[in-house]
Length: 379
Ligand code: UDP
Image 1 (spheres, rainbow, N blue to C red):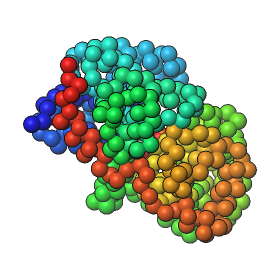
Image 2: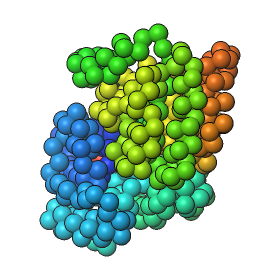
Image 3: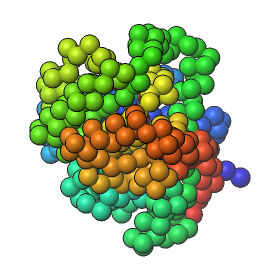
């Protein structure tokens, strides 16, 4: 007999929406599950696009996005606003994902009310509390509070056990990002218009090898962003390469990458893409160069070599599987790794094998099974 509960799911940013929509929809498929979705809208438009695609209308929308708000301002607004809504809903369980301020503060607000917390994508660690900052500590705080830990990989589960999380509260499920990727590809197959924008770019660039680039990490703002722009300009000296660059709206990114690359004839400087368009670009890319967390997980699932512009990663599984390499933001390193992939077909093939170190596309099914059947922690 399943536990019939009220689940309260918090979603703050685009990657949370991408990684939680398969869980929300799977929970909703279970007739007896009562699911409330609360968007904090820590990111506004990027979040709305994904929820709309997944046919999810949030039950609560806290609309907390403000231009240039500090972490203090965001955290204090989140704590008051999430606490108020939790008091209205009185859920049996709160579900948070990943490492955002929404996830961390959502867990804290739940703890203050003694409501159990489930953590989707638990156990990722870089080992450096300042990279990714503040996400490494956000994720650790959620671990301290949660009583259900959905680890995407065996490695993440090991990390949690080493931190003395009881083994019977850890569930290895795979990462729901792979479920989302599959869902997006099915949606595109059923309705190609969903990705018509990216298709027009790919048509324009046919015959060129696409280097898909995204950058938005705080650690890379400033000099790092300039070194990335230098590297891309050197790579573009190759006439067979087109750089496709969905530009993050943050001024630290826009004012450097946007200003230095937009006028190049082989650069497609485009707005942040809706998820189906982005998935289609990923599937068509020859090489992916990124500092994103989620893209490090999606690229291996599609067999795309991915160069990670970070010094450390909390997702080493892609590197161990051979699909990803850490390149930091050193100009020469980025250029030489891209050229090696372009010129050395054996090296390219070795990196381009598709593996799924992050999951098999059934993570949300496993998570929902636990959510519906686990009564162990109910007080
Ligand atoms: N993504 C997207 N459109 C874009 C760029 C990325 O839909 O223009 C998706 C991508 O497929 C991945 C997620 O956004 O699932 C990653 O988000 P982001 O890089 O913002 O955050 P991170 O994963 O680093 O937290």
